[in-house]
Amino acid sequence: MKRIAGLLIAMVTILGAPQARGAEVAELLRKLNLTAYSRGTKPPEFNGTTAEGRTLSLASLRGKVVLLNFWASWCQECRPEMPMFERLHRELAAQGLSVVGINAREGTVAIRAYAKELSLTFPLVLDSKGEINAAYGVIGLPTTFLVGREGRAVALAVGPREWSGEHARAIIRALLAEPKALKR
Image (cartoon, rainbow, N blue to C red):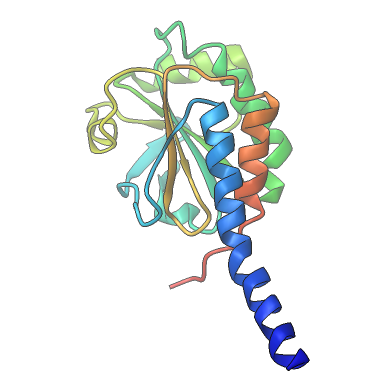
């Protein structure tokens, strides 16, 4: 009987942990005013070229937590977020965070100048035709998506947020604590 009770407690503890973590993440998302996606939602795949000429796809980032920010150099509300994203990139890339900026319809020269001015080192993907923006349903800038390690859409922010604040960092740490996705 003790053995069965022990097994039941172990099962509840193991099976309850992801739900508890999910509730914790949901509360953090609410505090940062992010819109959560339902558990099985997959973000649209994209393939793009960075301002440095490298190819980048969402599939290539599987196993990482992805912070995907849609921006433009002319967007005044985007500007204060960029140094915050750079700090997150520098501090958490080694732990599995991938910060990616998707530019809205600007050319390589403008993107490189902006990146140099703000000392940005995370990948900035060109979306000169607006195809990635359209696939993600972006209707205003900045717009930011969080994608979990296993490739699920976690949350969406339309408009600027305090990405260097404790709530944002807690969300990212919780997502980084999730197990890595299995390669297919």
